[in-house]
Image 1: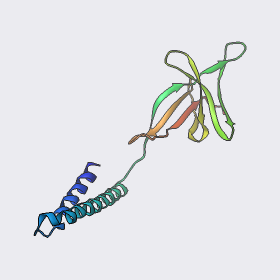
Image 2 (image 1 turned 60 degrees about the vertical axis):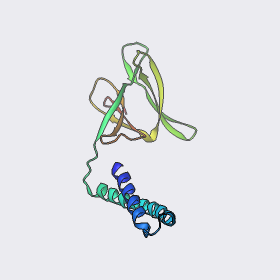
Image 3 (image 1 turned 60 degrees about the horizontal axis):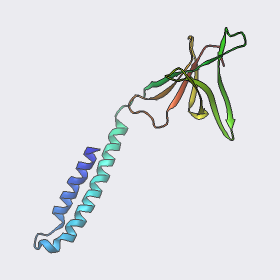
Image 4 (image 1 turned 135 degrees about the horizontal axis):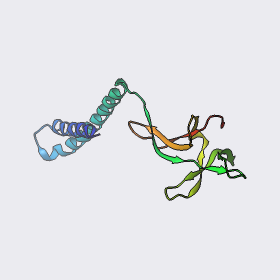
Length: 155
């Protein structure tokens, strides 16, 4: 970004200097301003093309990381001995979604709902179930994907 600004400013300066013929400074001002604006525009376009070509040519390995993990709660059955993880899917109106209870840091539980198009469900051999936001390692996405892990046989 800084390079983009520097190239644009440098191009504006070059355009300003080259636009006048040097005979009369006052009559050269409109041409110098126009030269500076055109130079800045051309420098901006050239630096964007340069940045896009570098971004396209350099290798990129997309890796994802988990952040903001939260435990999904189990609801006990009538005997109070066993529980099953409550993770429901359905739709309200025309929007399919997943509904679940999430453990809060203070020990409480909160009913949460996520749109179905951002949820990926995994089964693993583990004792607990959790939900986590998953984002790209390089820059986290603005709309995260949620990863949900359950015990085998749940789905």
